[in-house]
Every structure is written in structure tokens, then in C-alpha cells.
Amino acid sequence: MGFFGKLKLNFNHGGVKVEMTAPETVSEMDPGFSVAITITNTGEAPQTVKVVKISLIEDRMQTMNGQATNTTSSSQRQMSVVSDANPFVLQPTEAKQMTLTVPLNMGKFAQEALPDNAFAQGAAKLLGGLQTVMDAADTSNFKHYVEVVADVDGISFDPSRRQEIQVLKPGQIGGSVGKHINISL
Image (cartoon, rainbow, N blue to C red; front, side, top):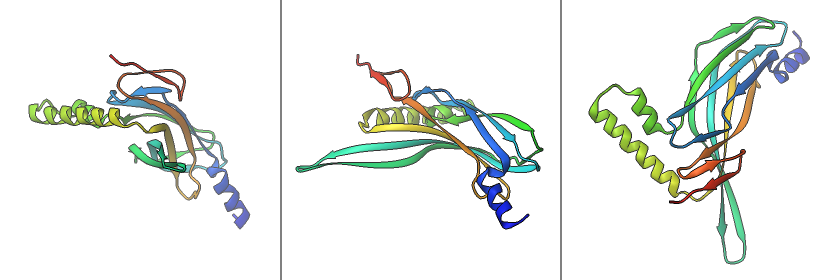
């Protein structure tokens, strides 16, 4: 394969396409949420997928009021990452489906995953409660995204898919993505 053939292969992700189905809204109180992924080889040659990674990304926008001006800063962080590192080969026109669970509230997620050990369960419950209190106290504006990346062997520009997801704080009721209602008791 010549230089331009390799370049074209990289720009079309080796013919590998990633699709996902994720919920539009989740609650910070949930231990996690499931994402259904379909990876399809639309190319003419077999492709090896080395790792499939899902990230929950938080984009925080904070406005600081100064005497003369208002400034807005933005930062991104990965709230949660989960990977399936079992490599597989996709033949031409073949598709593989999988479902991965993304941890959201680490204390509650750990509580569900831990054995019935009273001390470990208590520690996980305490951590989950602390995370809920800290998250509820933060007044920044947030956007959240779920991103799936398939690491394809020999391809520089790995195929990916990104979708906005609404992460509700305690006391919020969800609407469409980006819209919510605060409820106070």
C-alpha cells in the first residue's frame, strides 16, 4: 500500500465505525449507567480492535465576576473511564456489539461491587455520601459527554463517537439534554 493509501486508511479509521446508545439523562445518585456499543468494519480488510474505552467527560464552565470584566474559564476532566481490553478481529462487513457499565457515583458503585463485608460497605457508603454532598455544593455550569473510542491496530485516528448526557444533581428533575429543574424541599 502506498503513502496515499495509508493516509486514506487513517482518515477513514480503517473502515471501522463506532456507534453507541447511552441514556440522555442519569442521576449522580446512580451507581452507574450502561452504554451499548456497536463496532462495524465497513472496510475491505480485517481490522483488529485492541481496546474499547468509554469516558464520562465533564466540561466545567465557571464565570468569575471581576470589578471591570467578567471572565469565563473552562476545564475538562474525565469523571469515569472504563475499558474492555480484550482484542478482537472484525472481518469485512462484520459488527460486534457489547455493553459496558460506566461507574458514576464511585461510593455506590463500590458498594454494589464489594462483598458483604460490613466495614467495606460502610466505607463505600460514606464515600458515596461525601461525593453527593460535594457535588451538590458546586455551583459551576457543566456539560457532560459520553465518549467511546475503539483503538484499532495500525490506525492513527481511532474511530470514536461522542454524545452529550445530562447528569442530574440531587434535587434536580431532568428534561431534554441541557435543561433541568431544581426542586427544593
